[in-house]
Image 1 (spheres, rainbow, N blue to C red):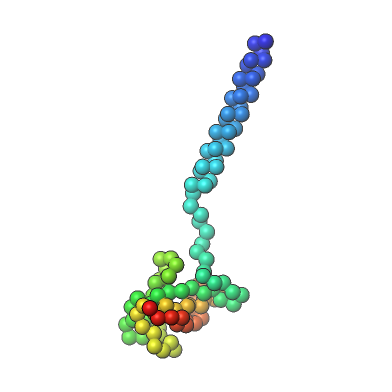
Image 2 (tube, one colour):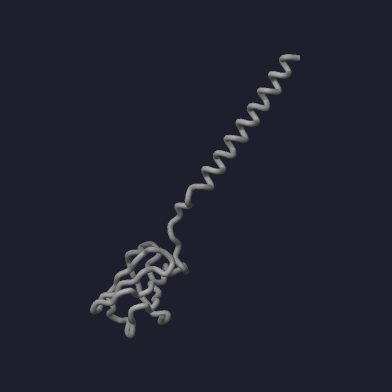
Length: 110
């Protein structure tokens, strides 16, 4: 009889340990922030497209801040006419190279 009691206690101990480990892993995995890169507002087959609000214009140099995250952009305003501070623009980048700005277009005024 005594052997069976120890056996039940050991089984109960193993089950409790498994539950505690599972609970610990679940809490640990769920509490870590996702480390996925920021995704663009719209990704089509040709470009990655991001929206920026213009915050400063100095000559033909234009500075903007993202409407969705903390990223910033700088470009020269050689072709885009009528852009002013607080305008929102779309910036098109090559899919493989986020440094290579393809084009910028004004989408609205604030």
